[in-house]
Amino acid sequence: MGLIDLELDMDAHYVLAFSGGVDSVVLLDQLYMQGYSFSCVHVNHGISEWADTWEEFCREVSDGHYAKFYSTKLDVDKKASEAELRDLRYKYLREMVHVIADEVDMTTYLLTAHHLDDQYETSLMNFIRGNGAKSVAGIKEYTVIDGVTIIRPMLNKVTKKKILAFAYNNELDCVTDKSNFGVDYTRNRLRNNVIPEIVQIGSLQAMHNSAVATANHISTLETFMFASLCVPAGIYPFGNTQKWGAIKQVLDSAHNDYQMTILRIIIEKSCGVALNDMMIEEIIKVFFTVKPGKTKNEFEVAYATIAVKKHKQDGVIYITFSAV
Image (tube, rainbow, N blue to C red):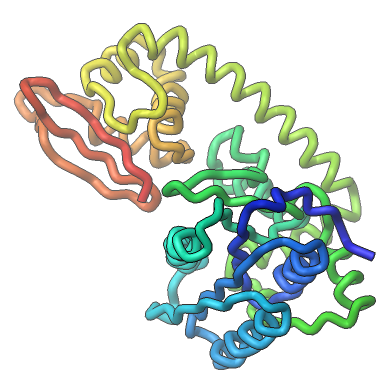
């Protein structure tokens, strides 16, 4: 008996982000049992002493399920942050989707094995880091980055507890990364220390449902705010280059309490990056606080998740927001 009906397109090909952990092993099993066309891609971070062993395990499991296997070994500092490792991992995964799509000549999607517990953890992390009210809704089931559609078929359907039980009952082998049990990373602290305490006094599902509802309300208000304030000034969504003067005009006309909210909306609509208050405040100070006689029309600053460039073309000053 299967864990879940994946409800994917049978005519497409799927690239599974395959770590060898229990989550991705169970998703691989479901893909195989339900007859989908898929390949496995493994990223060897090269940090753990077991990294090469895990890669070989993933190769053997893929071969055993008649799935073509691809892998790479990252050249990274052993002290690299969780975010840095994730960005490098996803960069390679997206590149491989394009490569594999050409090989199989089919519509190809990237699959990850995120589940409900990941959703809860992400909601809490975003709340703690102040990444904006909408971010507490957590991970989206579908996202498109660099022309690659990422699907998370287990995200809002299956808990970690059910995944572990399914793997145990079906005798599925997997690798165990002991670093997941430590507290070196924020997510691990939430997973191992904070969330167990929360579930003693309330429901994570209820908390997440409330967060999603709040995020949806805020999204509606932000869409209205953008349409009523920004579009009339010549600022449009889905274009990462905007007229600097138009944004400056909107910010100057707004009350100080609303300036950060307005710029956050503009940036998110422009390049899809959600920033916290600290970064928004910094961008306003650097790019939109004009000091007499010291205005610079061409310069660029790279932050952790976004690069902001002010430049001049045909006598018009523009500002470009780009995801890093």
